[in-house]
Length: 189
Image 1 (cartoon, rainbow, N blue to C red):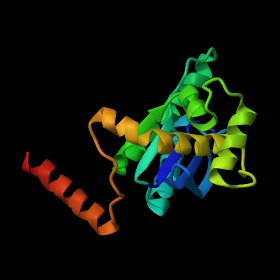
Image 2: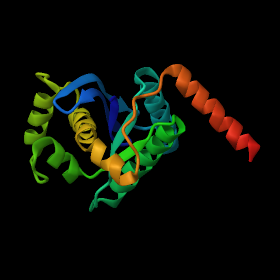
Image 3: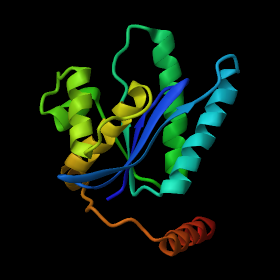
Image 4: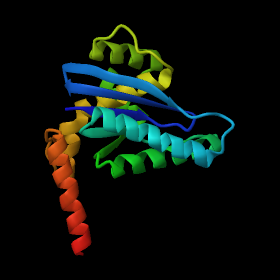
């Protein structure tokens, strides 16, 4: 199962693509998607949408796991992160990627076994679970890796609660056929 982990932000969004299953995870791609400072927020959000769309097109994840916002005392920062998060969710939905959301405590519990684990402990366990020496980039990238791992560990339970089953990712042909069927269905209504 290929999962795209996303740690949203307007200036920096961490992304990580993790393949495999619990006990055999492999980091396929990780990066920090940055938008330029000094540019209007609307332009930055548009750029962010294009950046995440490019990651999805290149790596074709079956699922996306996105960090759910938590209460922040800084309203300005919370608003900007929520705007970026909204753009990311919209781009993922537009690409037909099922999105799952996890709180920071759920991610910490899934990765480190303790919902109040400290950042260094979570990063150390993330590296261990991915069998890598280090994760390049700012903390946002390591956080995205942890979010993807969280979904790998919680996917079966989360899907059962939603009444779905884990399915293999579609081939390019299957995706094109599904998209065509969806368009036909939309025009028939």
